[in-house]
Image 1 (cartoon, rainbow over the protein chains, first blue to last red):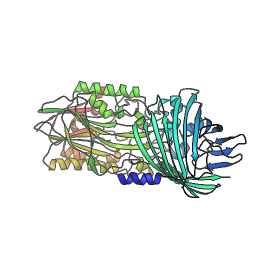
Image 2: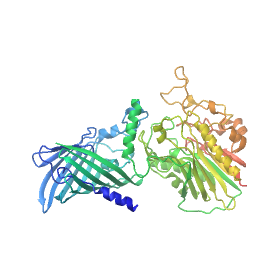
Image 3: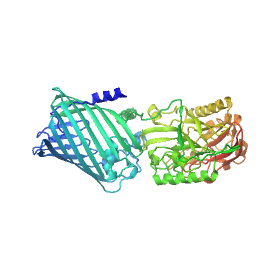
Image 4: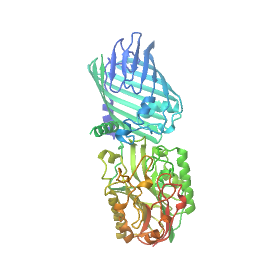
Length: 255
Length: 361
């Protein structure tokens, strides 16, 4: 067990490069664009802010991040996000339709439920200090609210890691999230990154979720990088607590 | 081809997404220890010369609600209050009949469809039983159909006396399914435990055999169940056994229930539809229980059943309250007294409990 933990720790010394700062309090340069398999499309704007859009149009979301004044050694920014999950949740009631895989093969939400029109608004403060080559720490804290046209049926939850906390705001109407990231460039093309996020879901059957990434990042240029590592998730669900460990890989592109 | 390709891609995707230290589906060993339960408060019971045994498929505590999976309904996720109401009705019936051993089938312990209520623990804590042994027949972190989600349902033995050496014996998987469906499908089993009644231990055996297989899987299940009973007798022990065998008696007068069981929009035995509905035609398997009747003692003997079949029916599908077939049985290698089919409990499940008194030897 000790060896497994040591191995995870070594792997968790993930790695990153300074060109890609979308998750820190820094904003992207005007006109720069980034996209990855697991991250949304982002674009730097000319007024010291950036915009990101979920590339999966079935669950549209848009967020806006802008710089704030520096506080001592901390760069600061705030981010606002609006998401519309109704189409995605309705699709998950019958992803490939009744005809192909009757009855409702791969449905994650029972077709018996009516999914109402819903919207969520999430805002967070982000602070970063340091530089990637000397080590950069980013802390964030935010809160979200869910606005539902009608009550969402209680058992329309998807009780799976990653998904459950992100949809919880539509059931509980409120969500709190705190997080931290540390990244350090240790060679010209190699960096490591460790981050965690804690979701607090008051009022839900599952009250918390803890997600932690450890990533090694190989940056070919400011146009392409690969992230490789793991994602550890421990959380509470309507059935009780459970932990999951996933391998993680992402390809990200910038231009 | 496209269908299978799409299913495989989606399976791999979801498999990756929800992989963890625990497998997505518990595939079970051929023989493994059952899960032991204990009531919150224990009441000591002395040994008896005659004990009362009951078997009951309680349909995971949803009574006659129109669940989509085993009838013509469209309900998938049942409310917590509905499940508790059904369980309370089951518990009240049990307290009224006061069996010493009960063999339950279709008990949910952690299923989204029944609000994640641990029904094994609830039944222990709300009846006079002290100990339980549970063997899952369907345990998956997620079932990728109809929003069923997480499932853990199976067979349960409850006893007033301690249960020891509780074992889950795996029965063959259905042979008429593709690999993907089979992986996520039910894994039927036989649950066997020693009832440590002071000075007079005996074996309790519980099973729930396949209903929907269209090949020889049910025959294999019946043989597997009997093999376990034969081994108990060969070791010089006595047993009480039972369960939902999903099979009719050899002298049943009706073999085809396709028309009785058809849902709205279905049609069977018309000029265009000559095939049978799954689980509704018994013509080719009517003799499969004969070896049990020849070797062991049923709670309801064949001649008693044959004299008035309808008095001993234990099942009707969906919301139909007119019982129309016998699928549930109690067996022993010694003898029963006073076998009763409790048809007054018709609203509490789609199966009827059977009880009988067993003279301890």
